[in-house]
Length: 272
Image (cartoon, rainbow, N blue to C red; front, side, top):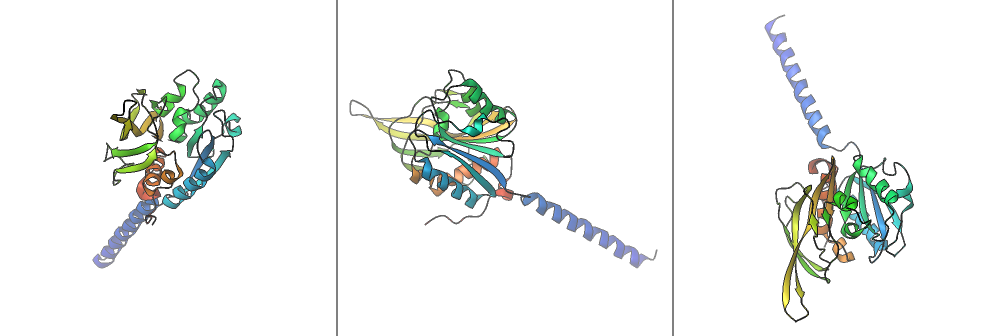
């Protein structure tokens, strides 16, 4: 082969290799398909009828995710969801968002069937009253969440401070103070949990003095090989619809699915 054709051939090979690398990099960054999320809502004490739509719209606006909703209008602490009675109930989903409030549902087979999906690898996001669900008298549900909580204080503003600012979930997010919200207590922090945000609230005591109360309000949990993101914030509709809250939950969802922000996070202008 003459020198010139050999140089041309070499350059062609290099060009094809470069194009292949660029193509593979773009393929890795671009989601092949949206994540599939199941949002479960219902039970006591919250406006789930409106929050289901706020969450679905907010998450789909911010991430490449398709959110399916299972909603129960039952407003009691015994709200149940038929889907949880089915075997392999979550097998078609990448992540389940638990936003139910069912403290008095205590049947172990029912609860164990919920947990079995997550033990099998389905990622989870737990919001607000999900922390107070399924009080069976065991640690089963709390080990899944990563923190045991038993109660909350009055509705007062909560000053949220991100304690791990380098985590994928919190990187680039700014501290903020909520409207009146419920600060959940922390009875027990399991070894598998990693706090990423704490909240402080000023509460008036019976004697008229004020006391500062502080708790973990957002954290991750390693449930075996399954990633779980949790936040106790999110009682009122204004908070659930707040850009800062939706950004946090969206980041938590992407992290729980073990995906990158670059591939799944959309660029969204803040609401006016």
